[in-house]
Amino acid sequence: MSDARHPRFFGMRRTYRYAAVTKNEDNAADGRFPTASQAGSRICRLRRGHMPGPAPFAIPARKKEITPSAETSIVVMSDMHRGDGTGSDDFAHNSLIFKCALDYYLERNFTFIELGDAEELWENKAFAQIYITHTSIYDRLREFHDPDPDHTRYIKIWGNHDLLWQGQKSRPLLDDLFPGIGIYECAILNGPSRFLLLHGHQFDPTCHGAGGHVSKFFVRHFWGRLQRCGFKDPTRAANNPGKSNKLDDSIYQWAKTNHYGIHTVIAGHTHRPVYENLSLTERRLQDLGVGTRGIRKKRPADPAYFNTGSCVHPRCITGIEITFKNQKPTLQLIKWAHEAHAVQQPKGSDPPDAYDLIVKRSVLA
Image (cartoon, rainbow, N blue to C red; front, side, top):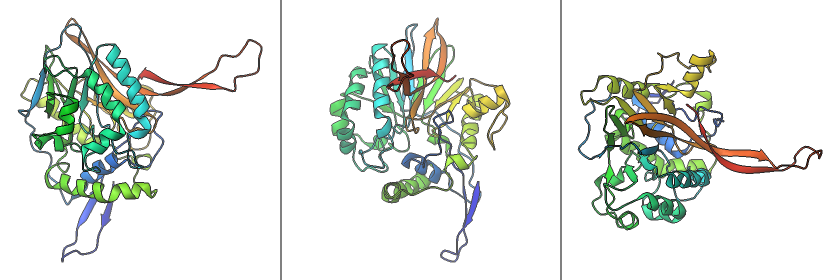
């Protein structure tokens, strides 16, 4: 965390504190420059003076209730930030990986839950250009959709970067693609253990309201241009151990103390994968005693809180799979990424000099 003191402005001296959010913490992390979505999240964490903590969170009225059966399988992904295909489109480099993952889940009868920030509507003023750029992705998503809300396998939750969907009663192109689609603030999985699924910006006191408007203004009018010019952020995650601890802690504490009968919260927003309240680096520290600078040694794993990560990691996408057996849920943190396999050579020949590039699913936790 660093302090930047600015000159007097209208007779006032202002002090800002900047807390960076983390990126992917597995072996795909490489210190790449922040994405537009990460920049927006970081601006959301600009705090003037002593910002009060988040207001008590109440489960909203616009929610999707899901009662899983014995055969239900669900995959939850967030933070695609699909853009217009320009240099500031953070999703473009992972679009093929994402498409392969959709094919896998479609064939295996999974329900796909998009947990917010699917479209980058801070940088882009209209959905039409996003659709034109990523038509093949929306063609895949349409195969999950059913106009009957009781039978659809595509559930869409809004986040802060696609908050536009919250207030729109008329969505001409989206409604044409997905007739009868409902867009919700959260989803609830009912059963012996109740799950709340939401984007997570609701626990970030400066990512909505006035703070959200400021962040959106900066991302729309400045950040995309800075990205295309090769602007480097000196506080990128590779150099800053700040992580997303505060937001993770807020959601975890709510999950442990809420009065709604919610046992587990699954969120996105931070872009950092979390499994049972431990990020991947925190888990390594706990299991192996090895950790990077600034990583906290936390309490034992607790299934009260999970985070999907994002689909804009440098070389992979992450998510949470939920499967049920006798109404008992099993959760897995998964990663989809490129992997190179050596081409088979005749026995006794020289070592391989050719490799096949494949897309592979792996279980992180």
